Image: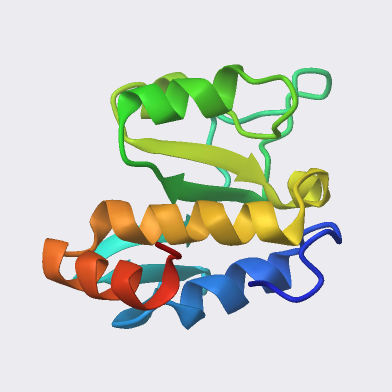
Length: 141
């Protein structure tokens, strides 16, 4: 159970939850942004500003995009098509099993919702043995 699960999520929560997962390593991008990996596979990272993610009004590149892996295309579609979530995608990520979220919109998620999404991202990239062990220790039933 996550303390303060109902409060709005923050960027600090992203770091906390990603680091709390087992077997995580952090690799910095060339701009210093962290990439969280499990078994050499990224599951959360802070993206550099890119031309495919821009403010529709100003045309400015978003400088606060976070990439979170998902288990399936169906999960991705459910998240990006639900108007109640801040998740989105771009054509660059069309066939990539991930969703994007702006750090400035994390507060639209609760801390508990973000924790679950990061746990799911980790499980989508970790080995079957690591996922099985984690689920045995952390999921009810």
